[in-house]
Length: 170
Ligand code: MG
Image (cartoon, rainbow, N blue to C red; front, side, top):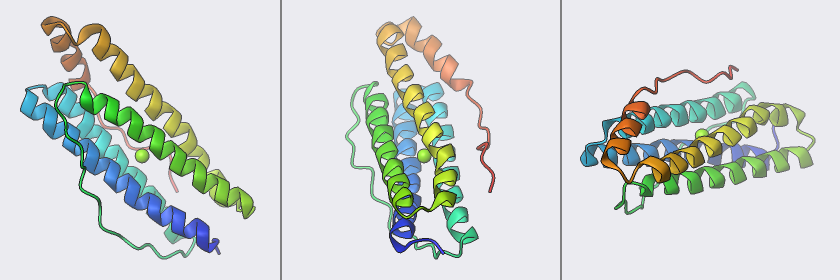
């Protein structure tokens, strides 16, 4: 049996991961409108990954007989204007998600819930990668994005990203 507080935080994380997918789809749509289909591709795949994360949290809860309650997903209330806006919003969002996952880990540790701690290990590592990817994108945009040719090349590069299923299986 999982602790009630831990269940509540895991259930909240399901919602936050679906929200992340929603936010990244908004980024993808913004880039489609900007004519940057490579950037759009990158965020469409990112959205797929976030959906995978939500599914993993749900499955973990269900494997441990915890009831999943699906709540309303917030509207992405972000005004995107500049081409770099999604990149900066994305990094700040991933830092926020990291703090949420750390808070679940903290609650699990207080309950000596070693199973949940081990489950979250993958996500803690994943969040490190997400933050690195987000900040790398900002750096690349700063280096190459101000020049039309550089932006084109960067868009081509991001267009090459392909979806891979998460390495975590439950
Ligand atoms: Mg995620």
